[in-house]
Image (cartoon, rainbow, N blue to C red; front, side, top):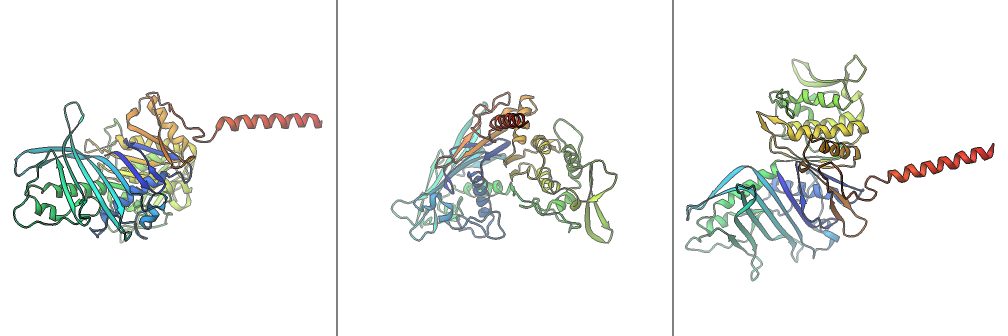
Length: 466
């Protein structure tokens, strides 16, 4: 689970300050306030990790990637290449790992990793790493972090083509013989094989590379506009990694999860994803029932039917409201994702009426509390939204103790002044937002007063005309 994030000099953000993330983290803000850039940054790092070129510090993207951010100049704050992109994030490992020093024989137990990095542009406008740093933590009996190891790779101030390695609480021992120049890294985060060759007890840096890759593998993304529905869906029998950035793999995901059963909240009753999705859609007032049928024994094609409220007949998915097709990938992704997944979503409530948006918040609570094989799935949701109804329902559930206050984190992106500012919303035990931003969702009272005044003027004019 991602615990904190901080970004400097990226797009509209001079400095986001530290963003503390919870199982449900919400980002609000006006259009072009920069809130989308936070998710874009994470997805740019993910596609970099997944790229085939290990020397590519940042992969800005192409037509097949999650995001397309252009050149470094287009990414950097105020398009000024003198500004260096800096970022830091911390995540908890799914399970504790051990690092053993082959020289001292000491074992370090690691439960959390804090990573920071600084990127710059050289004289040829090439993206290069100035430094990156790992701090490895464990938790003591009081659930407080205890730093175990620190390791840093930074440019040599005397030779800009080489890097130096420094450690804290861990003593590296150099191999005798020829000196290997450390002149490159693996993407933006990784130690090259030369580091392992240079030191006798640096094998663990390869474990750090792997942990980083596994972390980004756990992140799934669903964009704001989902693909349109079809009459027929093909399925080859394979299990997709996710529903896809546009929800294009939604139906194959449901079909491939026929043997997976999940329980919600305190209920011990286990259901397959198709049943959970149908129940969620009904709870939102969108349909009465939902099913997927194979059209023929000899063809690997399927149709999706729904039964709308008040109707006795099944109809094809394209024949019902657009909102259902847009929220279906959201629901499937949330319950299809493997345990310890992070799901980044933009506007999951799009095209839903207010009541359904409120219920969607309840579904998200079900998601973070869901269990598989008797264990919590440990799903984290990072959501960009415009929905007042979604937030109001979460506030209500906090007051009702359905979800604890510490499981929800919310931020508001403000761009009334330059640079943009990301303001954390202070939610108390009763679900109140203590620092509600002015005109957060518009000025409702101003509209009510203006309407009343206009009504009085119109009534007075009607009386005078008579």
